[in-house]
Amino acid sequence: MDRPQEDLDRLHRDLGRLADEVGAFNAHRLVRVHNNVWRLMWWQFLRGLAFGLGTVVGATALVSVVALILGQIEFIPIIGEIARAIIEEINGP
Image (cartoon, rainbow, N blue to C red; front, side, top):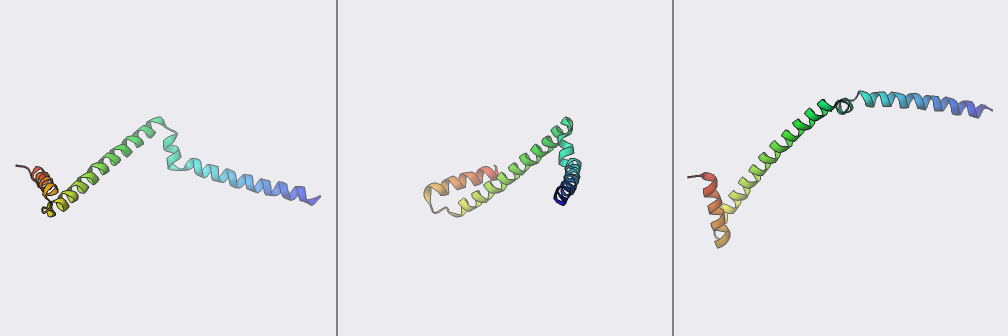
């Protein structure tokens, strides 16, 4: 006889905790951003700018390091000439 009441009490506590968690989730900044179309578009625009800038900076650093490494191996005929041409192109006239 006591068992159904305990189950109902536990269910009531669990539902209360679930309601608290859903409330906390809905108050999260990411959910609030996704609830507004204009805010979401602005957020995605800024994210795209950051991604593009990071890609350009990373590619520039990678190409510079590769060109410097290739410039050090001039003793290999074909690669040395390509590396020299790349370095001259980077340094400009």
